[in-house]
Amino acid sequence: MAVNPNLDTALDTAIVGAGAHALTLMLHLLQKRKDMRDEVLAFDPSGSWLSHWHRQFANQEIPHLRSPAVHHPDPDPYALRRFAESRFNELYPPYDLPGRQLFQDFCEHTIQAFGVGDRVVKARVTRLELLQRQFRLWLDDGSTQLAKRVVLATNSSVRQVPDWVSQISGDYPQDRLVHSERIDLRSLKLAGERILIVGGGLTSGHLAVGAIARGAKVLLMSRRALKEKIFDAEPGWLGPKYLKGFEAESDWEKRRQMILAARDGGSMTPAMLTQLRRANHSGLLHFHEMCQVASARWQETYWQIICEDGMELTCDRIWLATGTRFDVHAEPLLAEVKAKYPSPIVGGFPLLDKHLRWWGCELFVMGGLSALRVGPTARNLSGARMASDRIVPALAKSTIALSIVG
Image 1 (cartoon, rainbow, N blue to C red):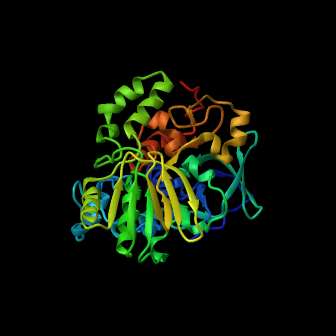
Image 2 (image 1 turned 45 degrees about the horizontal axis):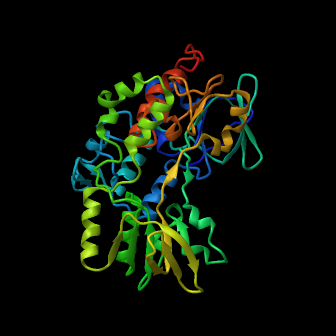
Image 3 (image 1 turned 135 degrees about the horizontal axis):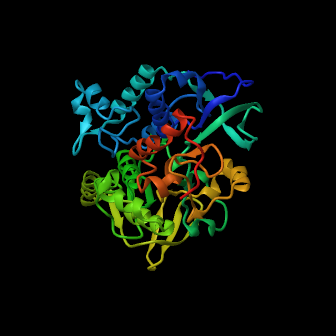
């Protein structure tokens, strides 16, 4: 349920976003300071927690999370396991990966248990204005909200679109070439169609399985050989095994390289690759590894594709499962902060203090943009917990002053 804030009173903390990172922070903060419940609000166009998260999982018919059951917004890592005591069939092997409905039900249970169901304002923050000792949040209905501190927890990223897309000449139906984030499998009728899915990550696998289930044949194209990994980053990045060396590295560019190497592009789980190989053996899917599109042309009713190796393909739809990237310059809400408090930017990542605070002001950043501090899993559920561990002490204790980046 959405809440209407008192726009005349300055909040202690405004959280921009109501996704997994925002909820994780809210719950971790209230575990430390229950008395802050009425001083913190989240702002999101949906007006509810995890709305975009649940919609994306449903749109792509993702059966379960890729993260084990210990990764979730509740401060108690074992809370989900206890919640699932009578639903163990919804924990998938290996490592007890929570099913989609189980995770949604657990999150709703946790939201109610912490009493934060009404702490989301249904509004999009369009501008962050810096005042002398606080912020003014401009909302899409024209109203404003004052806040002493702001946490940017949108985890927003930039869609990666191949260069050849911008070179397509002529018009084509907009639903015939779409990025994966815009696809809702539940609304599509695909019987008899051929679909080219570009990308080698887990999203492309989910889309392929969904398309095949609807009677389509799939061409799965990846610019390199498909990689098989249980997790998108090695578990060692969740603790001191890898993070100790990462945090000891004082060269921020080297840290960025460590982040990129750890994630190393898209990958698929062994279970997903097994499904796709079976589809390949039955003729419902064809792999095109080490292959890239050179050009695409819409021929009135279908796509004509020419690959860089000269191979030609035809298809009815193109789905771009080409992922996203994080770039501080692409986040409009940070424009005024960057202008007033210039901070080093390393390959699109801002240099934050140890509490993930922008140097010079009380703005905190969670999600992928915090990777130079949190590490390669910054965008994940585990990263939300690690970021909360850094931010909460600064929110809970006003005595923790602004620090110089270093």
